[in-house]
Length: 360
Image (cartoon, helix red, strand yellow):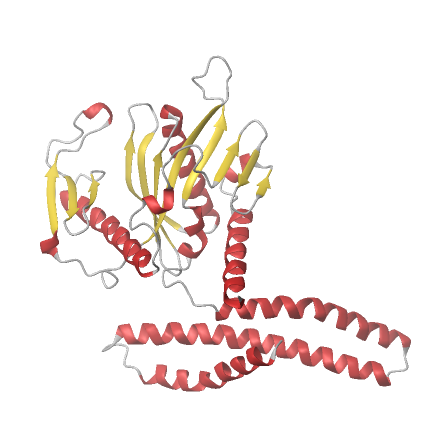
């Protein structure tokens, strides 16, 4: 570990008692927001200090073993010390990498719940069916992690699939794991309706939005246009006799959100507002980061076959992530929610990229 990093960690370690003192002096009943901010800072600093202590213990253990080898005469003990040194010299760089990652600026949305939107892209009927398959994949992945799934809006298509599925996944840190799922997901398979056995290629787009709290986004009610209408199903047939469906337009940005899943107009409005807040928060974050787009298109692309992040090939039982050149030959398990290998690899690649940019 270089001196500058070591000195920085000592400084952070020395700041912890003062942070703990400040945290203890906040009256949570009077200032919940300040307490939450300080509690998060305390948690972040504690994580760094814990990792630093682990590194120091390993380094001290290694240094002691090297000194003991110089005076030890028992060959068996010398071998034991050498093995310990070898093991620790593998662990120390990995631990240092973890420390560097912990020092990177945190994405403020990483701890948030998410709203996931899945829509068909190129591929017609098969793309609409693929939307449902991806929904099952993510709900099973959530179940494996004991995350709560809440359907927000599920709209059937005329073709037997879905024209849109929006759902929430709730758990601490879920956005940090799922944000890299955003983009175009391509499937290559023989549709059930294909009589000639030909492989079709279809696309569904996935957007992953951090769910915004009311404190995150201040929406002026005067900036909203709210329309109500009767819910309709596939083909336009009415599924309700009252005006329970809600369409909300955010006038300054032109964002339009609609919801018709619930029988109650109030419930549909609440769900629509959740989606609107999430989209506005995402747009604000993108603007602050000087990124190109301010709405969900920045995530999902155009929905064309060439604009893909991952391919699911049924014939070869293969799933390939094109961003990190990772291919796994267990399609059936992936579609059953076994996404850990992809999620962990994408998080690691993102961290490595950020570290490289920091060092340049």
